Figure 1 (spheres, rainbow, N blue to C red):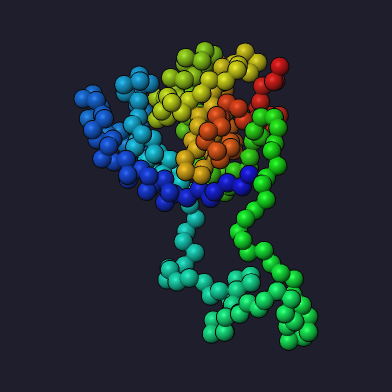
Figure 2 (figure 1 turned 180 degrees about the horizontal axis):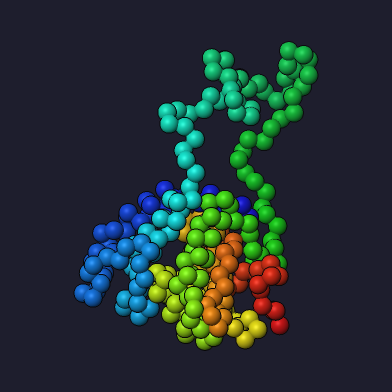
Length: 238
């Protein structure tokens, strides 16, 4: 399934729309907003607000977004695009199907209904998808943030793993417990938002964590726990 291109502006717009509601939901103990990059307590009443979490997504997306293609902001000449009409050229007029053209050829009718055939149903669990350039970059930054937060501390129990992830600025409703991998606790952090497919697999170790970004389903109704990873990190299904 092709995924919608993930851009910093999408996350920024959503983060701004939550600014007013977030102000009324903070507890007295969190009246001062934590800046992006600062750690917060893993306690449920001290975890980051939704706006703070979106600010984190937005910050990494901004850092990974390429520069604008041009400063003028002008739209490209359609004549330079595949199938475009050069500037100043007369627009093409459609003729009834079966009408010969100037060369006497009869063009093949094109279906312009906009309808696409139904996609075949895929059986089995959803598969890992490829990350785009921006999400691959942002995923690396999230992985680095998590490994830095966990460095030098044992994470041989899931409770310690979850606490470190939450303390790094990720909401507990985005952290999902997974089956242990070789006896080590594992979690997945769901970073999908408005077309994004980004998630991070996090495995606890005796000296920190291993964090690896991957692409989940664009459909957020599909839990990241259901996504079948490529063989390198996925636990056996049986």
